[in-house]
Image 1 (cartoon, rainbow over the protein chains, first blue to last red):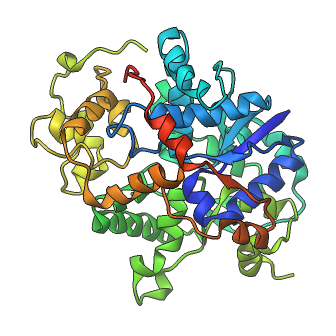
Image 2: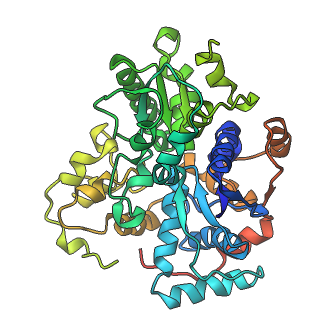
Length: 275
Length: 128
């Protein structure tokens, strides 16, 4: 099956190891990964409200995927939500489809609404039996899950009924999953854009709870969650370095369990590979 | 999707209860919906717990977009919007293919600026 990986702006700019591991994992699962040729922002959460034409940005990427006969696998929540939203706008709404296509036509493209969009955790959850069969390495780790809000909600857009699909993947890996009260709370990353202190406070609250409840690794499935929970830990904890906790992406964890040892995945190797 | 409009809102406050921003003492779109503030449409973490919490299936997303059109974009967000318009990416990216090569990833081309301009000059009025 042909897929195109859409990393999204945050992963593209800052989390190459997440993209790399996602490629490794999806290749192992038998997907044929094709390239779209060009990257364009999905419109993000910023442009809706600035312009209704944000949908054209998502439609552009969807049209590129349709042209090469691929479905899209996303790595971030925001992009997933936007692409699915655009597909829903088009569904049964020929006027919107015509309007979008009149713009795409200027760039030599057309979009018929045929590209399925799934976030990586949807794909891995569907394939979890196959994932379980590919595990080659035990991981002595107690994982806290940070669910990507926009992959899961609102259900009318995402089409996902089970809020624990991320957990379902980790359940087939040889590791322990801890429970903590804030598991389904937003990490707060987007708050950084309008109230940095609020974002930092929310990130701290989540990470502290993970640690208090016994986790020694936090796993996320969105570039924005990774940015706040991993990259901003110095800002979150300041000089209290003992409060820090490693954070990684779902695909790095899965790729690690599959036995990959790429330099891009070395962070996990350093932490857990004592062999 | 057919969703009832704001007239269906019964001011039950479930959305406020679910809101991270409101819980943190800020004003968000649900503050506007519940008439406790008249700004806050841009203060959203996009977790969409409010939409799931609403017993009346109010189109909170649509309301938020309508309100955003009337409020100024927060200054902290303007740079991201400029980046999207300038290079098709929320972040300013420089030397991306050197980094990708180092990490074992194939090079990638960002969309050309004139194409972003064309896309954002289209005529779409989607139903939110």
